[in-house]
Amino acid sequence: MDKTRDNKSSATNTCGRIWISSVVFLISFLAFSMQFYSVYYTLRQLIILNLFAFLIFLNYYLCLSTDPGGVPTYYEPISLRDNVLEMKSNSDNARFCRSCQVYKPPRAHHCSRSNRCILRMDHYCPWMNNCIGFYNYGHFIRFLIFVDIGCLFHFYLLTKRVLNPIPPPDNTETLIIVLNYISCIFVLLVVGSFSVYHIYSTATNTTTIESWEKDKVNNLVNRGKIRDIKFPYRLSVYENICSVLGDRPILWLLPQRMKGDGLSFTVAADTGKWVDVHSRGRSIIREPKSRRRRHHIAHAALHFEDGSPVDTNISPDERKRGRKFENETLEFEKRLLELA
Image (tube, rainbow, N blue to C red):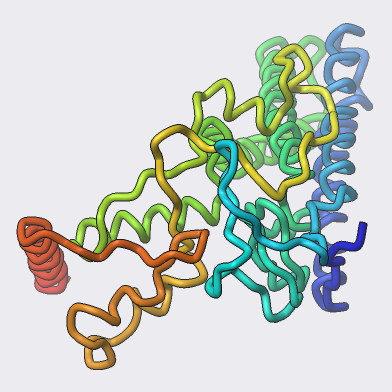
């Protein structure tokens, strides 16, 4: 199967190797440094700690080594069919990537770091020197979960040793305990907050890019520019999690290959179509008013994924609410400037 291939620059690869080395060193330090004093811990505690370390390293390796999914060069948009959202091949406005010279399936985006289009792209992760997409997002979620659980268990062992200092720790062990505490707190704050966001994204079946798109759509709706549009990929919480971690809950935390091809996705009933604001609406949102033609051009770049234009027939009441929202926003910004 001929797909768009990873094409990172040498600078990106060099920075990626530095990030990967730093992550491996940090995980290794947290996993093995305190085991020089293993006599103060039970065998069961050490086995659990090493098991978490193994699962963290395994999922980290899978996440950075698994291809996130390139767009097949033969892919062509097809029509909406059987409750599956795709694009019409006869549309002149089908999403096409000029850099990769391929049509982009739903939820696919071009990664500037990898220099190719990624299926269900979430974000580019410098820690792994890899883009997080359709085929490795499940490994990424498992990695975050095991890092959080492993650090919490590690924090518990450190605290237990500090509260029961018999025999008293020597200078070397004291230094190791302090450094482990600092590392654990740092990882829990950084990775923990990151994990909460991505677990919520998994439960709502939303990628990082799509969350930006939803914010932009809500902004346009609040300003009375377009009608409210429902996000089509949000199913039930169980179905959303199954779409990433697999159909069997008992195996959710075990490494497994992603099912599907990443070219089409099931949508919820009665949601309509989603707007590709990320690639089409950005220039409209930031475009100066002097360049817009009244009542028309302000929405010309907004299209549904099948190429059809967004309905911009706003009622007078909706337009009035949009103007009220803009006036309140300007007034709020003015008050902030006065306080500053």
